[in-house]
Amino acid sequence: MPKTLASRRPEILLLLFLAGYMTSLALQIRRGDRTLLGDVALALFSPVLTVFNGAQRFTQEGLEAYLWQRDAAVRNEALERENLLLQEEGRLAQSVDEENARLRRLLNVSPTAGYSLVAGRALMRYGEPFGRYLLVSCSASAPVLSNTPVLVPEGLVGKVQGASGEFYRVILTTDPSSAVGVASQRTQVHGVAVGDGRLLNVRYVTNESDVKEQDVFVTSGEDGVFPPGIPVGTAVSVSDGGDFLKHIVLAPAVSMDSLSWVVLQVHGHA
Image (cartoon, rainbow, N blue to C red; front, side, top):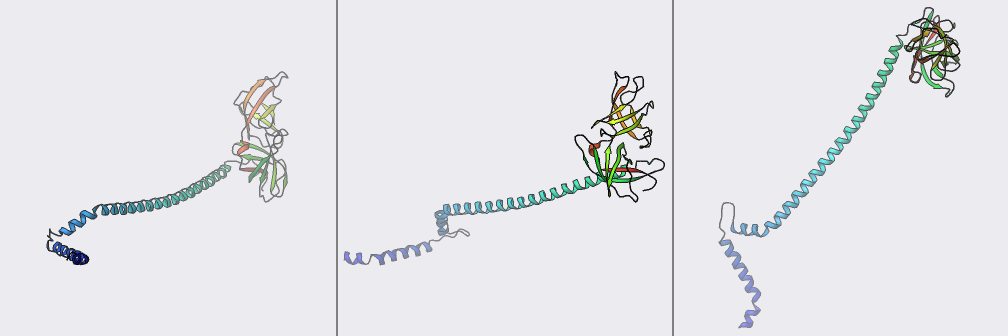
């Protein structure tokens, strides 16, 4: 008999399992939407579900954070490009405004009687460290002759000294070979302003002459080249010399390092 039971053990276990399962079904107690089996299953699988939900939530939040950062980076890059473009447009607009302002300022130059004005573009300075020259591009209906005065609203730049087509070589007042007849606006003391590279020295003024620092010197017209009354420079140093002549140093009326547009004062109509 024991041998018979042993041989039939699988069938007995299966019957017991089925009986238990049927008993469990019969013992289901409904608690609203919950059942006893549901509570048992929830208790058994709750840790696994918690881990799964946490992993799912972490993955979802990580994905959302990545997408947000990616979108923010794309927006930031677009804003940076737009900002750079606006900055470049702003610089261009400022450059155009400054250029227009320079051109408008040229209108403040009043031609001397018998002269007319022709605008020219100052291209480059050259001749360092000794000569001081300016290359000017200018279109005029008639040739511009040598010794034609070159001006800006602040005063005298120099004079034309040679041309090639529409390009003119201008010798600046600060060039050592330049000489301009000048007179003090305050006392009408006359002299000759000669360049020394950066400044100008006024020669042939006696020690007895009334000249002070900050006196403004203008063209006297005595050299036959420059019309009278054009500002040349301001005295920055005045002292008596042992040769009975004053040592007078002028700072140029014009900043030669920042020229962009000039006017040529030509005889008659250009």
